Amino acid sequence: MPEAHIRSAILRSASGLKIELIERGGSQTQSFADAFDGAAVQGYFHWALQVDSLADAFASLIAAGAKEVSPPAEAVRPGARFAYVKDPEGNLLELIQPAA
Image (cartoon, rainbow, N blue to C red; front, side, top):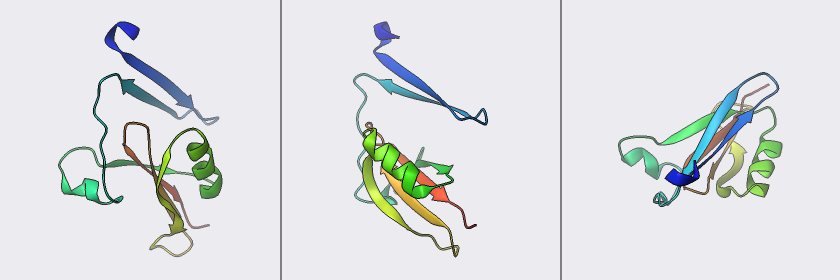
C-alpha cells in the first residue's frame, strides 16, 4: 500500500500458520533498556513464538535484520530455552524452545 506508506509481509509455515508483519512509514520506534521494561507500560509488550530450534530461529532472525535484546538462555522451566529480539520498529519478539 505505497499510497499509505505501508509495507507488509506474510510469513507462512509448512503447517499453515500465518503471521502478517506490517511496517508503516513515519511510525516511531519503541526502545526498552531490557526485555522486561516494556511491561511497565500499557498495551502491547511482546509476541512469544514457540520454535523447534532456538539457535536456528535466533540466527535466522538476526541474519534478517532483527536486533539481539537477550541472547539464547535457559528458562525457568528446566530444559526450556528462550531469547528476545526486536524487529526494525523496536517490537519485542520472544522465542521459546520448550523442554523436550
